[in-house]
Length: 334
Ligand code: TRP
Image (cartoon, rainbow, N blue to C red):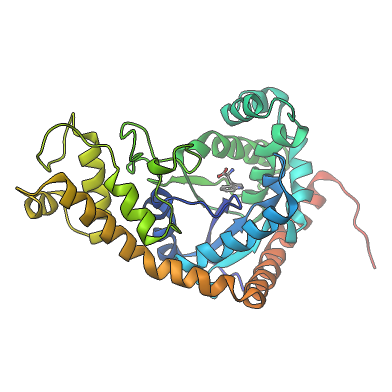
């Protein structure tokens, strides 16, 4: 049941490939929101089809994403976890908001420009209007706070503009959301090019540690991490690789950088890398195990989806009836 709590909403693309950057900077911290906010986490399969998908893969990744969020600590009893296409109001409000979003605004979106360049053979209208569907996701739930990575800042700004525009024309209808820019990747850098942030779509697998990587893979990747020609385990300029590893180590252990530097004073890079790999792999082991357990229990995941969709639907329906009335749609009386 929703109540008077303020709302947090975030959407996540159906991909099981999230990195330790996503985990440490974002997902791991999401469960804390549920004390104070009503939190909606939505697997955005409708956004996913703006680029071509293999149907069986999309379906599988939708389950995986839900399971991964739960394995990372999001309790479906305390958060509303659901799949976008299960709540038809997203499409409905998406269309309406298309009519309050300007061609010029959408043309300026950097993600559209990037994705158009990458998918030159499939620059479809959905790819173009992606941000107004995202605005619909957010505005449907009268969201106050939207945790997103910095790459989504521009889309969020547009959602605010759309909300303000609509409110100006029709009077207060939508809460104007604030962004909560997660540290997602801002601090966790590529293991191969430590000046670049760790990205889940990096072509070089050695650069990226994924939440679901096996212990062996994690250790291997840390062993191969690029460092520098020195031999001191301290953070600072010219030592981007070591700084990144220290940072990852402290994120998993809760120690400070200074404590970690002291701990590894006089030790070699090899030993240090192994220690970071082990602490990372061991911290993620419970997540991996829980993920496997959940994926083996489809019936339970489906029950979570159904319960989430039901709760989201109830809230979304309220907003939609307000919107329909304001714009002058006739009501069907029965
Ligand atoms: N566009 C976001 C991304 O690529 C996903 C998303 C869809 C989203 N709808 C949202 C994020 C609503 C926050 C709020 O990551």
